Length: 246
Image (tube, rainbow, N blue to C red):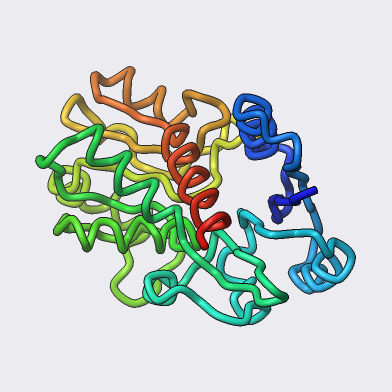
């Protein structure tokens, strides 16, 4: 049996097992299985690798996209530039990190908005955010980072409240935080909603629920929204190719 899986904590929100189980059934791959490996500390990764000798590949979700790097033997060069891992290939005991979030987000964004992508505010600074940032750089899209605390040139949500210029000049809002994910569906980044109008676009990487509170707030003001469902599927297919590449 060829084994694959997902590591992270918690994993109650994840669609990965369902996605790959259905994919394997659809493609008559009875020799493949996909499991969830939920553990509270990244050090537990070693035990999973030792116990699951048949593992060929793993997807990585929050909070381990950056924490997992020291536990790997190598990084794909593109992944090294991004600084976050969401896909691990295991071959002859060697664990190599890749980033397919980058590929999924970039393709999804350009399919949605085409060549006219406005300036963006990227909400959050974690592993998913790093993939988003690299994709925006490669698409020549100007962006600013927003987080709860001040670090370097990053904006805070308080900055957005105090200066309306940022929301006006950067109308694409990309939620790269887990806020709003099931079951905490009322959560959302602390944006000044009074500044949001029909010029705004929200790309929420959250895919469960299909329409987050942030997306609902944008739609109610006449804006356009997109969730992370097709990004999930695109990155999953990219991971599958990596796991099977000769």
